[in-house]
Image (cartoon, rainbow, N blue to C red):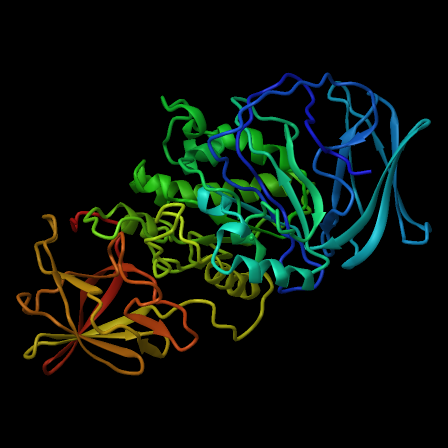
Amino acid sequence: MGFGTGCFQRGRGHRVQGAAHAALTHFQPCTGFFPLLFPPGADVWCCLLVPGAILSFASYYGDHMVLQKEPAGAVLWGYGEPGAAVTVALSGDGGLVLMKKMARVKEPSGTWTTILDPMDQGGPYALTARQGSENVTLRDIYFGDVWLCSGQSNMAMTVLQITNASQELAAASRYPYVRVFAAAPSRSDIELEDLERIDLTWAMGISPTSRLSAGCWDVTSMKRPGGGTPIEAWSSPRALRACGISPHQHLSGPQTPSVLWNAMIHPLLNMTLRGIAWYQGEANAFLHTDQYNCTFPALIADWRREFHAGSGRQTDPLLPFGFVQLSTYRRQSRQDGFARLRWHQTADVGVVPNARMPRTFMAVAMDLCDEHSPYGSIHPRDKQNVAHRLQLGARAVAYGEKNLVFQGPYPTRAVLEVPRALLNVTYSQQLVWRRRDTPAFEVCCSSPVSPCGWLPAPVVAVGSHTVTLALPGCGTLVLALRYAWAEWPCEYQSCALYNTQGLPAPPFLLETLRSSNRAGDMELLLLHPSSSLAWGV
């Protein structure tokens, strides 16, 4: 029997809306990806179950599920008669009991919790909970890596909605140990103990009718488009207060601060996780954009702290956290909300991991534009490249794979040729100049106390690691340099600079600081990430 099907809740009913997902990454055998996706604005309904003494697992445990493998222990919890003893037994495929754990049902919550000993990856296993004469058994359980995916509408696009969907569906048959869970999203004004409603119980792989997230399928896959949830809705009141934001802002619906944290993240805190993947930010390109350099790092730190505590310290306190940098929206827009948000997604550093965002990794997506997407240009259909770039970061940051290139090239220094008014920018990796007619670089020549009037800096030459820029109308007064600073910076996979592995150079906003290192006509400029937006548009 599959546990947690249909509507499951302890206590009063709440309105529910949206969708969430779970699945396994397939760059490791028998690994798990537990995605939680953005709620689309539809399908609002209520459910009500009265708490009772019936023995059960919590709503998101069921047949075919994946539990976190060693070195962590998987947390199990559920409901029972207050004060009663619950025995949980793990048995092998032949019925041999391999492990037993005892738990006492707490009063007055009526919940029990236990932690299994660390298990190697593999299966299948059965889990049986017993309370007196009652028993509940979950079957076909595997141990692997459990990942949580969260975000808004781009994390909600399904495999059926992406480019080459039929190929992805056909390829899914090669991954029989991918297990998928979908919890229907909901909102709540209070922190909930359990998920309110299940959209898809644990299932094996994806089917032609699958609503699995496309962004998670290859890292693993995506949910139907919707939009509008800002980071504040996914943040706890504690995380918001850390950034000086009131949890009581006058916003409504899924934009209300903490309502998605309360209903969709808080119920999962007992789950032992291996990592998180995040695809959100479009809403904050139009709402509280310049607070994102605080709210995003604060969310990451808060989720890590709460998952570590909620799992009895089984989840890593520096849980790997991957995210997708914003793609594109409007081709002709002169607004810089998307550019600023991309910058703030890195805590105004430009690359991750960094000091403010340790053990994070990022998939650059600004070159994956899709003007003709039937779901709107804000929902590009190329999720394979997104997932591939996330996968590279996960392999390097979460799994410690050495010598793996998972980031695009980034500038490390600049040298000003004074007489010729040229700026030579040195990059960290070998460069590929993919599109010569893409206007990519701009320089600021204004006084630093006034908004900057940005001027184009045409590319004169590209060497193996160096880009030479002309400074027309700027002379030698270069106060700042920026790259790909636009809502739609380039055509599909045709930004100016990539590395030899095909990863795009990320956007940046760097102040140029004069150094004392000058030799003849050459002056070294120190590049420093700018956290100031006094440079203008």
